[in-house]
Image 1 (cartoon, rainbow, N blue to C red):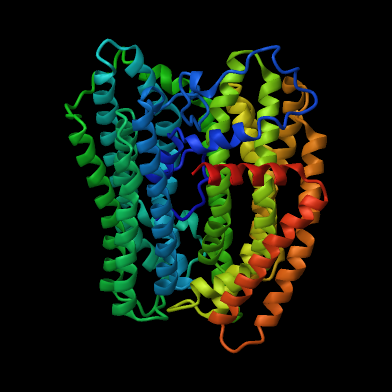
Image 2 (cartoon, helix red, strand yellow):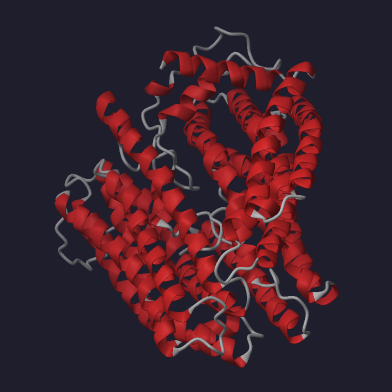
Length: 623
């Protein structure tokens, strides 16, 4: 399980999760239609209609979601050239796969929380399972997503053999590198655990090392899954990359349930047995193996026959690597930040336990569970907008129409904010009852769940700067600029790291991880301010006044909803038990709050809300 948020500043942009990677290599029609539905909402500074014919999205040769610097708007899957019926069918398969993958991933998290809890044992597992993804990201994952996959697409278009030789070379060198890296990582398991969790207790350290020796084998399966997914996408085969992670989730769910039955709730590093750890380690790795096997089998069924080749001279891979210098800077900064956060969070959990304080939500496990919930609104809403925005903005850059880049960015952010702002406020209001509802079972107590909810409340404040930063980065990628995002990451990461380390020294141990989302958010705040300031000149401004006005009005419109939601939480909190009180508070507060938000926003004249509602109404009637 990849427990580190995909767009966290502490992870490089290329996600190691094949499901997330495959989602980013899609052409999704619905977001494009959403943007077109609000096309009439143009900034006053845009040129008069008709001066330059607006290029229809279907005329843009490749509308793929080139979500990485250096991909030049490539369509990994080549879906832009597919027949409309095939494209719609592929989109439907991917949409259903996304929903099922997200749902099973959430159930997986709930089951692991019930099996392992949020204290020392949970922290040991989370750290051991995070290390293989971190090592893969640093040494291979970033290069694979940002350099080798775009290089493969380019060679498939230009080479006389359709890129067949390049595929064989790339697959061979990737498999060989992954095998050697996995073996080296397993041998260095103890050193890696000390690097990421320097203050584990003796028993906790031994548990984490034992688990890591099983889990580090995932590096090989994660990497092969990634390259197989990319090659399937290049053949217009989308189903397997979308659905294979579901099998992984189901396997880990089964492992978590079995561990809870065998070991029982409340297991600790001192009480857990070697057989329990073997179940956890082998079971988790088996989930990645199953995912990898399905993807490799699907690749073979799609016509790929591996013939190992290591004749790299003249292959062009060296040139591709040289173009990755700035991406590697970004990846290095991201991994340094991950190292800081992991060390701070794991040390906080150990110090709270040693001080005899309440250890509920004091370590990295609670932080990760909260961050996963925080990521959902962005993953569901903003990623869809980004999917449509990047190829559009790239096409505008190619046409020399930077005014349209500014227009698309402004429209995309304001459209995202219509949902992101009220959702962020709802997260702050309902975080604790929601976390109690989903997490308070098995080894996770009600107090543990409330601690996760408290962390989620702080995370929720950072949702808007998080979304703004991601959209600004896509503007740079559309402009073909990978250098500036890497330079921006340096002061942003310094702000994050300094704040996180300061918490370790100045905050009470049981409150350190509650403050970590503040450090997390500072990365995005500093990064967004710098990115905005540096983009003003090349884009002749970013429509800042209208964007600020929209944000202010949207937040003002949430005030009555927030007050109503708090009242419902307090009122239903008087009921006995936690399940029904949480459910009723969220149902009443969420429904009433949504209605209040829409009514107040319309009275305040927030045109983006009205436009969004009109678009939704039109699409529903069309169906």
